[in-house]
Length: 376
Image 1: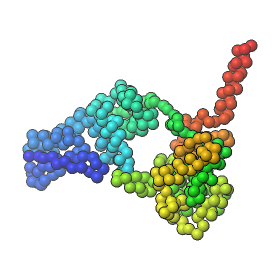
Image 2: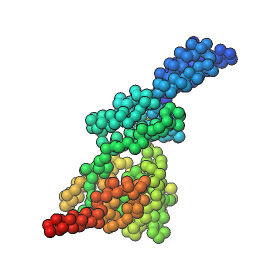
Image 3: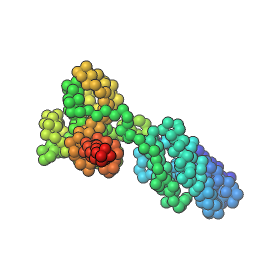
Image 4: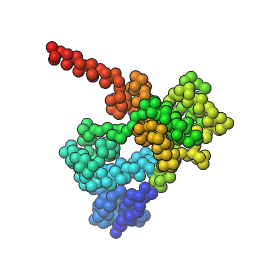
C-alpha cells in the first residue's frame, strides 16, 4: 500500500511525499507534491494499479492538468523560481495566502479568465487594498500563469493586458522640500549622520541602497565623480539582514556626484579601507532604518519645526525631493529616470510628471489661447 508523508519545508510551505514499493524491483520509491490533493491522487492510482508507477504516471499527468487550481500553480511557480531568496518567498507567501487563495485560489487554472480577474480586482478594492498592492499581487499571478503556459496547463495568459486601478504611487502624504526648506534640516542632524542625509537628497538613492555603499563604490577623482549603486539590504526568512541586489535590474546604476558632495565624502572616508561602508552608525555598523528614524530623524525634524520648517518629511521624501529639484531645473526625464533607477521614463513620468514646470505652463497657455478665442 502507498502512503503519504507530510513535512514542512524551510520556507514554511508544506510538502507531501508519496511512498511506495516498486512491484518488480521491490525498491522503495518516493515522489513529492506541493498539494495534498495531488499526493492523494497518486496514492489511489498506485493502490489501484499494483503499485506500478509506470502505469499510474500517465493518469497522474492527466489528472494534474484537470484539477490544478490557481493556488496549486502559484505554489508550483514559487517552488520553481531560480535561486529565490528566503526573503522573496517570505514576501510572496502572504500574497498567496491573503490575496489569491481566498478569492480565486480554488478556480481551475485552465478555466481562469478575465471575468475571474475582474472579480478579483473588485474584491481586492472592496477590502481596502491599495493600487500598489493590487499591482504587486497581479504581478505574482501573471508570473504564475506564465509558468502554467510553459508547463502546458493552459495556452494563454488572461492577465496580459488586464486594466488595473491606478493611484498616486508616491502617496498622498509625500512631502517635496524646496532647497530653502531642506537647508533647515542639516543643522539639526547629528554630525555623524549629516553627510548621509545630504547624500540621500543629492543622489536620490533609497535608504537601503545608500547604507550599503562602500568606499570601493566611489569614484571621487573622476570627472564627474560618481557612485556605483549595485546592492541593497535585504531580509531573509529569519528576518536577518544581508546584502543583495538592488530592487530591480534597472536599479544597478551610476550616479554622478556634485562637487560639494565630493568634498564631504573625501573627508568622511579619509584613511579608511575600500570594502568598508561609507556611512555607518554610531556603533560603526549598518545604519538601521528603524533606529535612525526613531532616534535621529524624528528629533531632527522636530527641531527643524522649531526653526521654521512647516512640513514633516519622511526619510524617503528626500528621494522625492531630489526628483522634484531635477524636474524644476528642467533636467530630462531620461536622465532623471536613470538616476533614480527606474525601469523606464514612463515610471518616472507617472510619479513625478505633475511637477514638470514646462508641462504645467504649456497647459495653462493652451487654456488661455482657447479662452481668448471663446471670449471673442
